[in-house]
Length: 138
Image (tube, rainbow, N blue to C red):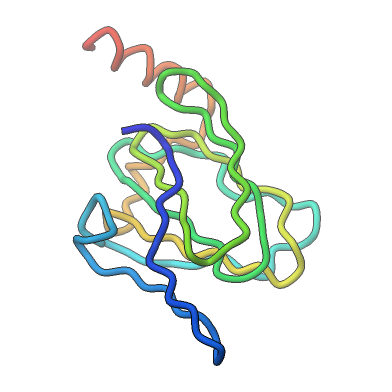
């Protein structure tokens, strides 16, 4: 599966809207960890890494930000997250950089794995090498 937007149920109401997640109905994996990013200073970037096996969904609960993704097949895509009723699904081996954070943006990250520093690929050249090895069955 490639990176893609996943739309969540949206229940509209004059008192305010409601969206929700139910596992496994709206998620392609079991939840191993949830964390959020906030108070990102103007002009800063977050991410700039990939995971070896972890899958993730990123939701902009408030405000907006862009996620630049380089997929395992080499295609680069820009996803603008600015609505709380959809999220960006990122399979393992998706290089991501989050940028263009609006004031008071809040990003929710839902991950398939508990935190494991060894699962991170933080060097882009190492990421390319990992993709090359995977495509050659090494």
